[in-house]
Each structure stands twice: as structure tokens, then as C-alpha cells.
Length: 471
Image (tube, rainbow, N blue to C red):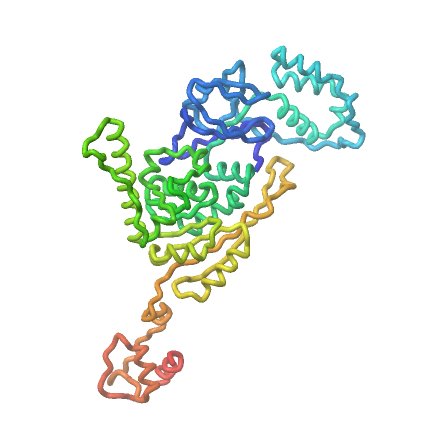
């Protein structure tokens, strides 16, 4: 959503995050918005030079220690922080664009002259001002057209950029616009619905099957905030590579104890992992390198066995699936490891996948309230006097299936039964009880917590009403 007219937006200090750094550090992968509106991903290396093509280059150390969300101008490979540009009211006039002929003759400045001005070191604002002064029809434009004209020129000549804060929304939006197929059509709004339906919260324990480049895993880790447990299941032997997590810049010391990974083989209780020997062949270490390798192997094997034991112990709070495989088979395999009232959320770019899953689980005991939803998103431009929906919108953010796990207990009774239990009206002589079989059954249901008196009495009109309602 466009909420400002300039390249710089109002920066609010973000709340401290436990999972990532609050300032830019060497080794971070940054998302940079250049004047043309495009977003680029760069790796910030210490003592290096970052090249943005025609928009200039700068020393990477200039960004180290700076907060996210600021806009910078490049001046001789140095960075200057630009203040936020406030939104300005555009006065409506009676001018129209009907008499404007934007041909080549309206702008006397040639491309060669503009390039000469740029090489002479003239600032972008001065170049734009010269173009405005020599534009033959500029004064005939409406105020809105003038603002658009300035914006186009700033996108062309300005040497500035903004560092985008690596929030889950911004990172998901970057990947969705870059290649939504790698995210399996998970839009930022769809991801927010998935996290909400799965009741992800700090301290919770969850299982995730993520074939969407790690966008689901990243969202769960971001919501956990370093507290809780996440076990991911993938189809590779080594730890999965989640490219979305690169832009999140998570702290390794915070994420490592929270997340562990298994593949489908090691997630099977009947499978016995093949673990290489952690002892030296000759009974004695030949070198320190061999000792380090075998110790590392032992740590990895111990972590694998511990993660398997934790998974098989069950009682997880939720299961989130965004996979190319059949979701029904995944749910059937991981269902025993979920706790009661655990939420199961499945995302698919195809409606038929989740529709079939809903029909398969609708009549199955142990599943409550299977539903299928589809998100709808429309972005708006918000500017004074120019607020309107954007012309382009994404077709779909995929489809979400959600269901709750319940225990299939035939002896359990509905809560409505307990709510409708009523004590019989006590008379001055003795409590009333039923005499017939049907009456005994109804009164027993209404007085299960009281002891019936040995003497029966005629039912009153109130008791007859109770009998009719509880029969």
C-alpha cells in the first residue's frame, strides 16, 4: 500500500525482537527498495562495496549499526539519511490535460545534455528542476499530473534507496511478487490467516510440513519469539534449505534450540535410523581433526534420536501443512502425535485438493468442523484526494483447510446434557418421583445428583412440564 508521496516513509521504532537483530549487522541479507520501486536482495559483507547499478554504489560499512526502515541518499559512496517526506495536500484546479501534446518538442533538453548534467555532479533535484523549467506544457498540467511527472523523474534520476524492515509481511510479499510458485501461492494475508487458524503462540509446540520455501516455518518461528518447539518434516536427509529464512535474519542461537527437522523416514516409528559409528576405527584418535569430526557426528546422531523421541511422545498443539504431497496421507500419519483440540491447517493452491480433504474427513471420528476458505485481497493507494483501489490485483492466494482434532470417546456426553439437567421441585411433604418407566427415565435424567425418596407423589403441573421437556 502506497502511504507516502516520497521515497521516504515515516519510521516508527519497532518493538524489540528476540528472534532477530534490531539493527543492521554484517552478514545480514537486506531487502532494498530502489527509486524505480523494485526490491532487491543483497548480502551485506563487511568492508565491501554494494553496487546498485545506475543508482550508484556505496560502502557496506555505512549501513552497519543503522536501524531498518530508513531512506538513504548516495553521495560519493557515502550515505546520507533522508528525512521522511510528509504527505502534501494537492489543490484541485480547473486545469485539464486536453490541450497537452507530450511530443519530443516539449522538452528541449536532449538525452546527451541530461547525461552531461549527471556527469557534472549535478543533484537529481536540480536536473528535474531544469527539465520542469524548460518543459513547454508543464504549466498546462493539472496538479495531479505535475506530481506524477515529478515522481517519474525521481524514479529515473534519484540516487537513493530504502532498507525494508524484515518483517514477515514484507519478506512474504517480496517472495510472492518475485515468484509466487515457489511459495505455492501463499500471499501475506493468506499466511496471516494460516497462523491465526493454527493458534500459533509463544510457548506452543507445533509440527510443520513446509514445501513453500520455508515461508510457513519462518512465520511460526517469528510468532514463537524464541519460546516453544517446532519440528519440521521434509523429504531430504540433510537439514532443509529454507530460502525465505535468509531474509528474516534470525538469530542462530535463538532458533537452533527451538527448531529441529526430520525426514519422512526418520519420522516413522518402524524405521531404524542407520547411524555411523562415532568411535575411531583403531580405538584411538589419529588426529584432532578426526576427533572433531566424530564428536560432531555424535552430536548430530544424539539430536536425531532425541527429536524422534520427542515427536513420538506427541501432545503437539498444531499441525501446519503446505506441501505438494497428498495432505490426507500426511494428516493420517501425524494425527497420533497431536493433542486434543489441536488445530490442523492445510494450504493448497488448488481448491480440489482441500475440497477432497474436507469430504474425506467430514464423517471421520476424531475431526471436528472441517472448513475450506479462500482469502481475497485488494490493495489501495492512500493519498490525500487520491485514495482508490489499485488497478492490478493477484488472482488468488490459495485455499485453506482447517479442522480440530478431538478424541473419539463413545462414553462422552454433550455439554448440552449437563446444561439441561434440572432438580425436581421439592414439595413440603416429600420429593416427587416418577412411577412409570418413561417417567422414571425422564426424572432420573433430571435428578441424577439427588437421591429419590421412597414415597411417590402425584406430579404437579410444573413437574409434568419438566417431564415433557426432558423426554
